[in-house]
Length: 375
Image (cartoon, rainbow, N blue to C red; front, side):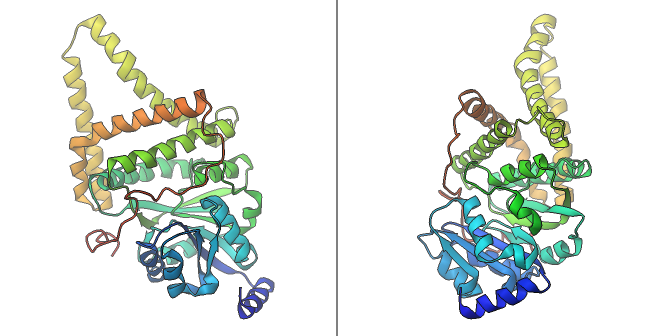
């Protein structure tokens, strides 16, 4: 850090703190990092309050970030993984001393036009964590499925979770932390999903209330192939069960245990219905017509939900998810229980893993069509 910057930091730490810093951690993000930084500026975040931590990229990530923000706002670290890279950046940029809130976003984030203005208007000392709304950028069939999942999940489940104080995950792209709690959470490489691990820490340590801001929308890139979709999903599910195991979810009397317990129960009931209940009904009653009838009823119900989600998100292409919805949901259920068996039964994935989920086709340059919903 230059002498001028050091003097500025020293002056600012003894004065009034600024409201909100944005930190963008990344590894090999040259395809998207400049677009993300420009998006943040357009959404109301001053360049002076944007920081990038480059985790040993071997492409132009650092160069592009410096061109837009200046050398003093970009930190390059030895390969650390996202959580440790964030921890190093917080210390390097004196975030706790200089800011009231820290927003950590993914390097593929495209913010809605008033994102940070909306955010700053909602932040206050009653809360320790604030969350925006994650949405998918336009892309292929995977992006369409994710757009539906995000719309339905957040407008229904997350609103309920926020109401009862048991938000089950603080999504990486849209979460802000009040800086006075940063020293109370551990940012380590012990989990495949650092955002879920931090979520459980905030709950277990009873650090305070959480705020959901659905009008602050952040658009993210999704995998462009089923292989990358499976890779990302397996990381999420394995990290989920790592958290279940590490924080003994279900064995405490906190709202988060109830919330996640209900999620686990819902998935288990679905599995039992398909593998046990339906076969028993068919064998004992011989009413084979029950199967197509049940399928039709469920399809109509799912179709109604998809239509509602498409209307709310104003993305009518979501309707196109219906022909393959059950196939991809079945694949996700299979991945879910595979991860359960690996982590809970076989006790695998117990060692720290340093890495980033940006390989394969996880990053791509954006075109006008992908940005249509952001404008």
